[in-house]
Length: 345
Image 1: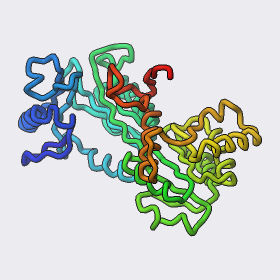
Image 2 (image 1 turned 60 degrees about the horizontal axis):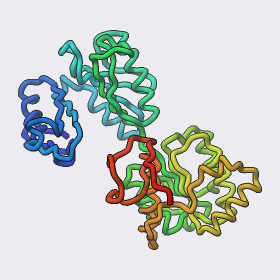
Image 3 (image 1 turned 90 degrees about the vertical axis):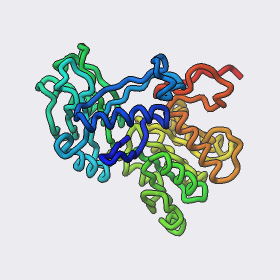
Image 4 (image 1 turned 180 degrees about the vertical axis):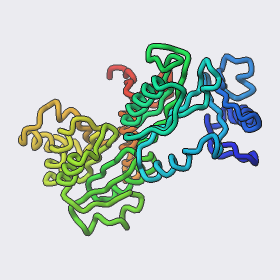
């Protein structure tokens, strides 16, 4: 959330829960120039007043931003726009108040800034690059001089990795709807089909790129170029064996991707599995395939089907069970990779 010098507000930190209190704190930081780490919790006496009635704890770091306090900001914005990975590591708590607000801007090949000691700079640079490679942001804890097993210094690493990729194979109406969902969720969407009459930008205006190539050849080339990572999702919507089988033979042998799904009826799915076994795919490799693609939402239209596919991708990422929240108990949100335990059917 940005509070401008004229008092205008852009963005939000909590969807409305503590915005009023954070706005007051931001105006104070603008006046004093001193960054502040503030904790809001439902157990606080003023919890109802600030609006944090849903429970939990929210830490908000408020810092002044200007040419003098954050000279790298414009360059960071340029990196993000150009899809160049960059992480910003900011000290948000330290026994020595003069450290608070210091930052490192970490790229894969260089670092801008310093925190206060070479030891701290080295430890945080190394960890920030690890988070950047994983596409994650996190608060890290160190000793006051950057000791990995110590406490006292907290550093927030904001990782700005390029958008994760969604590869949609098959230039059909369902693909157009899936591409729209992918763009909405923040993916860099590629639609690929071997048929030039169907694979056109006009038919897929929300896709970042439309490629005319045989799907398996394009995917193999992307793997060879190092353009596929653990955040990539692959949606195979061709449901035609001459495209599906060679494509999935490549996809299911990629060591680590977030999701591989293939469209088709259950009969199509069984036929597809038989063909994949014939070309030597193992049961462990086949187990990575989500098919028929999507969650069972009862949808019929391309748009409804796209929502079910997006829902399965989200559930796979965060460990959701895909059932109504009203039927469950405990926490609503899961940690990444944590699976909700479902009752036996």
